[in-house]
Length: 172
Image 1 (tube, rainbow, N blue to C red):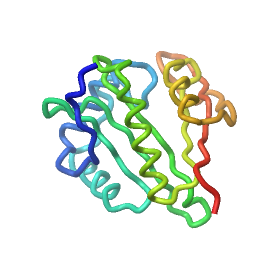
Image 2: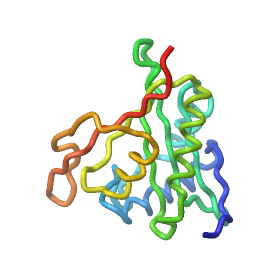
Image 3: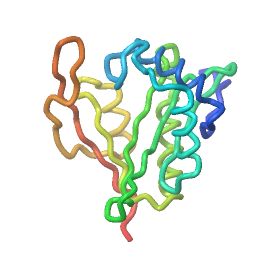
């Protein structure tokens, strides 16, 4: 396995690269929110979002970078309302050329560490129910299934269910 990539927090200057990454990775699997070239948020919007995550006390966007290109991204998106502020939603994607190299595992480990530092008690996620590799990763990292979200996704003219999962980090 070649370890020439670095993992770091995304900053607003990464916006352009993030957009091209999201548009590319969207075409490489049916498990993401956007298909190929369907991510059409303007650069300014992405810059704002990245700046907000950077300043946030309960959100973070991490990217894996190799040769100045983004090859993976992981996001922990914390909720704002007081009563659910202890919770954050997790999402991740990895470029297909880099699948099965442990990058997803490494990024999720970093996200869990950051979540603990930010005093987040619960990480939650949804994953398309036939995304076997991702579900395996999440279970390996201590996530538990909490239910099935019916007709969560609509892709290629078909509805797909998602598995809803959570990992409880700490109780106060």
